[in-house]
Amino acid sequence: MKKKAKNQPINKENRKNKAAFFDIDGTLFRSSLLVEQFKILIKREIIDPKVWFDEIKPLYDQYDKRYGEYDNYLLTLTTQYQKKLKGISLEYINKLSKEIVQRNKDIVYRVTRKALNRHRKDGYKIFFISGSPDFLVNEFAKYYKADYCIGTKYIFDKDNKFTGDIRPMWDSKNKIKALNFLCEKFDIDLNNSYAYGDTNGDLSILKAVSNPIAVNPSFEFLTKIIEDIDLSKKTKVYIERKDVLYEYNLENKNVEFKKF
Image (cartoon, rainbow, N blue to C red; front, top):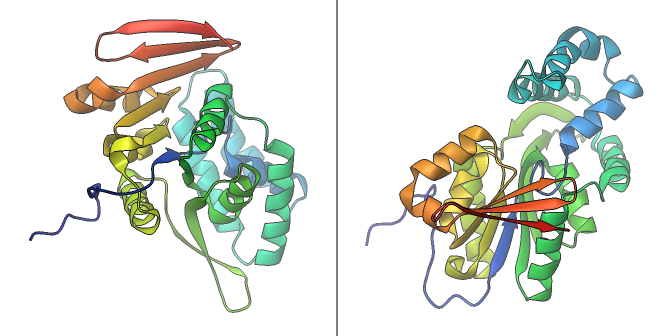
């Protein structure tokens, strides 16, 4: 029998457990864990503040005024973060990660926090699959009592210093591999599972489940969902603004709005 490729969802019959898969940044957390840690590294001059003012702040200002793209700002910041973190000890990074999560743990979207709590109450396994660094994802997952989490793997040498090398988890191809790993490990039935995401990197995990939810999706992500007929038929779109939740059904173009 021909095996399924690793970048395709693997679902077997008679699996026992159901799950809810969550992206973190922009889906549950209302910012980026990596960005919040970068700010602290700048403030404490672990990273030279000149990097912020010369290379990143101009892009942020353009985005903040809605003249530039958020992705341009984030890509530049992430590149500098990875470069400047090289040589920093795992002990210090873990200590800082605990502090970052403690400060930011409740800065989340109400719609996904409620969904997470509801799924846990209903017996779902809770999984985080995130492009943020694994040490930050681990701390965030502890607070939300996730059953398992997978983030971008940061590689440390024998002296526990960051080497500058990573194994990404922000793209769709790697996220589906992570989902398949979790399905095998926890015996997950994707036909009774949910997935929550906000950008293109989450497309594969939404396609894999029977109950996909796009949370405050980017235009490009939403376009890809609409272009996929099967996916658009089963996807719900949640937009959270102030104290209102807008719920869109892409199949029949209906919209409901509810007060939190």
